[in-house]
Length: 494
Image 1 (cartoon, rainbow, N blue to C red):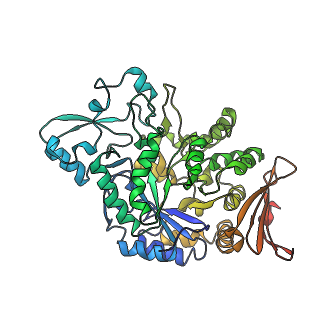
Image 2 (cartoon, one colour):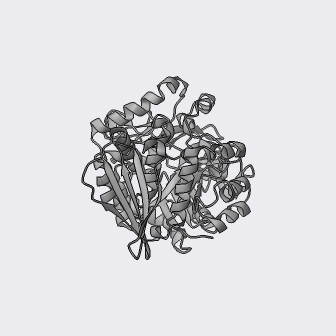
Image 3 (cartoon, rainbow, N blue to C red):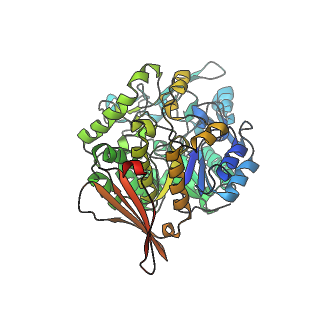
């Protein structure tokens, strides 16, 4: 299998580009040839909900998508990332179904977190409940009925098809060892989904609780270390949390970049973006969009409350006409007894920028030069607008940015001049030796331009972008000091 490299990584569902894994590979090899070095295939196992994130088991690839041979074929050509749910399993999993059937006699009984046993007095005090980092209005608990009619309350952070598990329990640790070991045989990088929710402790937020979080991480990393497999934790929170992970040498996500980029292109100001790129971790994967919404909590203290509100209001205005179609999904967070705050904005990144291709292309090109490895969501790759039909069909606000493309649609989209130029920049980013080197965030004389450079052994690549005129130019300089232009913004904005 190919190992992690500083080349663009595509993010997609197994059926998001063409319908299954063999077609995904064909699309990467043909229509998207040369654009990507890696691919993150979102959960491709059997699942009972949350579009793959309620995993029934990790034994096999869902037959609707393909087989392990298809994953291996991808991994031979691209560095592949797969998901593992550290925090929860499907209620249809063999482990949970055994507990439902056998109750206290089940060997999996203590794999699950019993609400009444968790709290000292059987239930949380008002203060303890207020302290919880909550993704549901009623709190992280759900009542289940066992086969003998007994009702039990178990920890349930997200959706009805999921139930949380206790990382410290011996049975859970065996579950981690077995399944993470299986995944590590096929991919070099595993994303720990919802990792920060796995640290539960009475009297705390039960979210990224220190020092407990480092113990949980060590437990989950055990089967990976022996195989040399790397890990990327999925954590949406204050950027300081990512800094803590980075300080310990782990890969992290740059989830602050999406809102900072929106602010920059909406205002023409680059000071906030420049500051973040100067201080952000270097061992990171950058995003502008993913299969979820545009994260808001990640940018606190990097933008002011007024700046966050400005961006949020403009994005929310885009989806105002479709809000009545939403039935509900975690889009707010409650913590420390405070009023619920926006967790993420529900829109495609292209629509969030008003469907303006030139503005959008500027944001995408800047991401490719930002510190870290760029990840590109399949909808964002093809300049995808909000999918209101999918939203209406599912009621899940995240569906607005989860359009699945047929191969015919892909072939049509890549002929769009702006998409075609973006693919040209991606192919350059994927092939230039400059990006094997170091990144620098250069000083600029004003607050509306950005200058980013990557310097390899024999070549330097520079991006100069002006957020007021929305123009950009990429140049290369060789060891002899000779500079040539690689490409620039379309003529319509020059």
